[in-house]
Image (cartoon, rainbow, N blue to C red; front, side, top):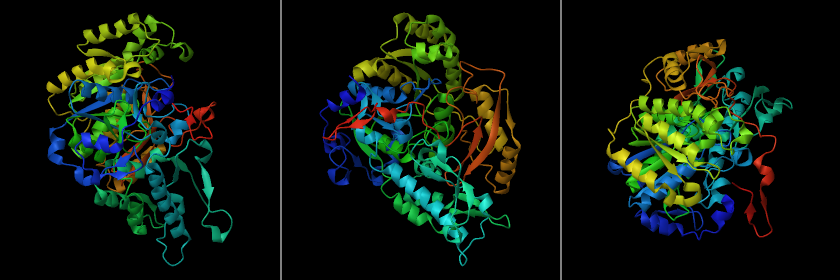
Length: 555
């Protein structure tokens, strides 16, 4: 059966029953129908957060279709509950870009899903829409101020860096001109759209401690300069209150359930190749308050999501995972071993063996963070015993435990061995990771630390635009911020064609965007764009709904 067919056969529990397993009072639930609810922030208890075991799930460099971190995260949490541990999985919300693009939804797969999958993959509880509206409100306020004759801040339209956003892959909107149509229609200027998952508002939502912190961060958004080169921030437009009001429900984490009736918290949805790639600090703390074990994932390979989870989110929020699961698939190892994308279902032990260099580099990176990894071999139907054994043998040589996780086919039962291995890793944990850099280092040093240590680059080259941005950052006194590097997910390098474990390459930083409200800088490398495009055959073409309201084609 397809993912959506499996999901539809599940008899969902009322969300009140899921809340009861977490000892949440029914009166504390903000219900969104029978199967979704938002949780109030006052439930968070820092003492319980400090006592919880946080488990990070990441992966090797993926194929274009992804490698199942979400599926593995859900299955692992199911497995932990099966072996008697109180566990909640905490995930990001899906963006409509991938849902209608190439990757599909982000609710897991097979018998390892969060439900109701149609709702979660589409509009869910409206958090993405709220982020989009708050972002575009600021855009409207900026253009309104440019037009104003009585309340003008004197903003130089040529310096405005704030774009608009939309939660869709639409390459035609990357570069647009607004304000055409005469003096009554605004000041003409070039701007563009990013995808909502790349919005600084999304990043702010995901890093805020509470509503007051959210409002403060919104006010600190850097907009551009005045004609006399004075920096302008969002608080000067007095929009942070209205923006925060639009986000008053979006800041509350969403409670749903897994196929096996265990709790799942889903909140926030930044991409990991162009943003920080992890769910909200609030959701993570909520899960850690309500459970003994929290399983959370960080987008794409460990060079992206895990690095940002640790160097940005954990340092900012004072969190530290006690174990890390590195998801590897036989098909991704074949891909990085040089096998053609169309032939990944065919048995190819040689390609798997060659592709192990990618896994080895990611394992080295985990060790650099002072964390002990467990490798989860996310089993696909086409995998053979010989191919799996190659991975197990190499991991054993490296002193790393590798466990087959058949969560797609068996749900929590297929993750019991993985759950036991993770518990053992937690019990041996030293409890504190080592960041890849100190926030107080120079911006160049921080970028080079990630590029050289994590990606394996020989060095970093800054374009003239990037050097100009560095001078701007210094002038704005924002050098102490961490770096959230935008880089292709398809390679450890900034060139998607360099598979496996590339060496002898230089990372090129094209420009550096300033996310002062979120509290980080965004160096953009290679050809990365913050508004993706649809593939030649988008997933949207497969999705349909019948006259009874039954949706098909989601995956």
